[in-house]
Length: 71
Image (cartoon, rainbow, N blue to C red; front, side):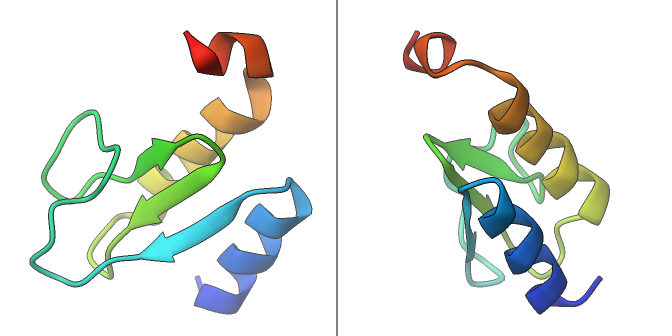
């Protein structure tokens, strides 16, 4: 999926996509390795992050209330 499509999708939901360098640890990743991470309304990934991981984490942010995100 092109980066512009992912960026546009996340922007639609008020989120921001941050692509990290290949060897960087992905910020906010629960599973580590190459899996996407979330911090607040920011989604973090690398070029080797599977799209399904990025979309899965994005869905967590979209579907969880602001109150539950703080906990």
